Image 1: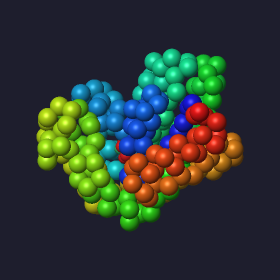
Image 2: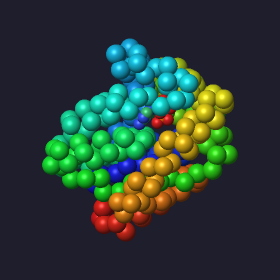
Image 3: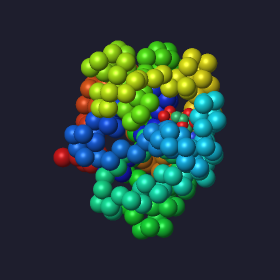
Image 4: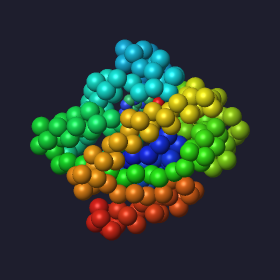
Length: 220
Ligand code: AMP
């Protein structure tokens, strides 16, 4: 099963992808998580990406495509995966298709669009917190840590992502509409676009997605 998750920031893609990983062992590759890790490690990619990320702009296509393809390359051919936050432009989507074809790997099965309103996105992202050390994600209301302000996994302090500040959230939504929403047409033309809800609670989002994947005969 090879999935691409589309949808505005805060639509729930990452959290649902994590549940798919925990419950069905589908590897979750999040371009945002990998970029944030690169920034934390101060690697060359991290240094190049940091400014764009802080401003809510997209990181250059070549940079993020190389990063994601490297990680895809490390997966076994039979490994199921979800791509979360990648591709985000037409160029990235084409590069992904070409890379899979060149390696004689099976193409993407489905692109799933998580539909969500701007109001929901703004209120969700404002409550999001991330661990400054290990990158684990939380939400003050829907996914609180066991101890307030501390990461369940490593105990480090939780932070608000720099790009989850209100002014940057609006910029990211605009970038999504302008640069990523056109990707829906790309996957629709391939007959691979499906739609799910990004509005409900996470468990319900997961169950709706699972039903969709069953209908598509991607899970038993
Ligand atoms: P996310 O966690 O997916 O919301 O991504 C956080 C930030 O990382 C985005 O606002 C972009 O600056 C950058 N980013 C993540 N994925 C991509 C991508 N596929 N292309 C370009 N920039 C990306």
